[in-house]
Amino acid sequence: TKAIDTSPIGVLAGEGALPPQLIQYCIDNNIPIAAVQFGMCNYETFPSCPILKTRIERVGEIFSFLKKHNVQNVVMIGNLQRPSIKSLRPDMKGLKTLGRITGAFMKGDDNLLRSLRTEIENEGFTVRGIDYYLTDLVCDAGHLTTRHNTMNVSDAIQEALRYGADDRGQSLLVHDDGTYSYETRDGTTALINNEGREGSILIKMVKPQQDLDLDRPTVGLKTIEALSANGCTGMVIQANGVLMIDKHDMIAYANDHHLFIEAVNA
Image (cartoon, rainbow, N blue to C red; front, side, top):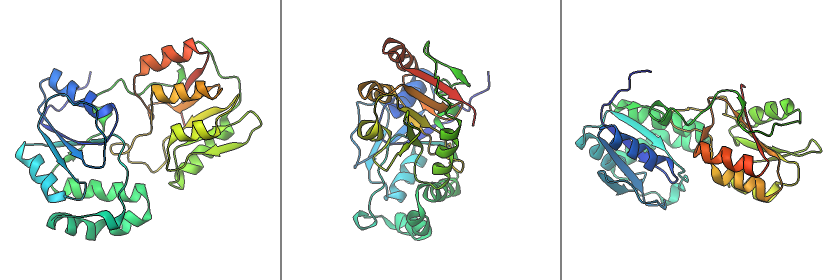
């Protein structure tokens, strides 16, 4: 078992189950943690820890809060919608930061996240992925369910990787006639609900250029429930790449509803 750096953690928290899971892990393991919540997000109840409620462009306020709590490691996790440039109301530090990253802001998510990482590291913090702490969120290659996939999806996996390389999305559906439907900014669940049909298979891969410490593709129980509700067959995810929230519940649900989950190396 690797030794974990137990220095204080600051979590830049988006929506979803993962930020609370990380906070609870830190509480259980006596690791100091402080969380930043953003006004555009709807949050579940958080475990008790120091919390700053602010806007994403209030960069000076965020960094001051993290330093006040002696944060050394920063984890950015959860769903966070990118605000429009016109809606931003930055503080002075935010103005300087935006001046440096505006070009990246316009070029797409991956460029923006790389620029954000640079800004965080320049303040003296270490950026870590959530899987540094919660090591059971990914899985090795193999069949995770009793039902196995019988369709050859090797071409669909390559197509998903190509789509990701263009920074357009992480997922597609391959249908039983060999055609594809692609994820948009509305996300994976919307893709399944809008385009899923009898025999469709979800393919979810890591974008080749993705910074896995800041932006991990994720599936959860809602994903497998949507596949079931739309008559789909199952999902193929990238081994040791795609995060599985509620992994055991996902596998149990898939087995109960005759879907498959397979992890593949890509």
